[in-house]
Length: 73
Image (tube, rainbow, N blue to C red):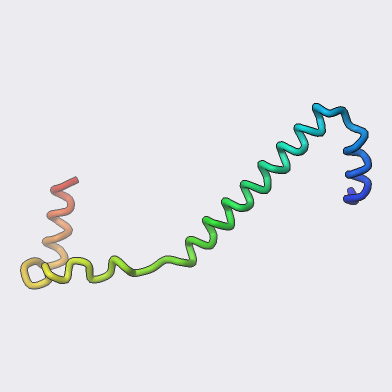
């Protein structure tokens, strides 16, 4: 369907259907924006957490820390 024929048909629909179409279009736009945000956030992953426990490196091995984390769960 061409956009021009859709607009022409849209103007002939009852107001209740026009409102539903507008509501649905707004829903699709919001969903697309949300998907773009999610997609962009996946690409912006950072390793800011890396080496966050460096002060414990001399006291514990990584395996010991894993066991401690499992105890705390």
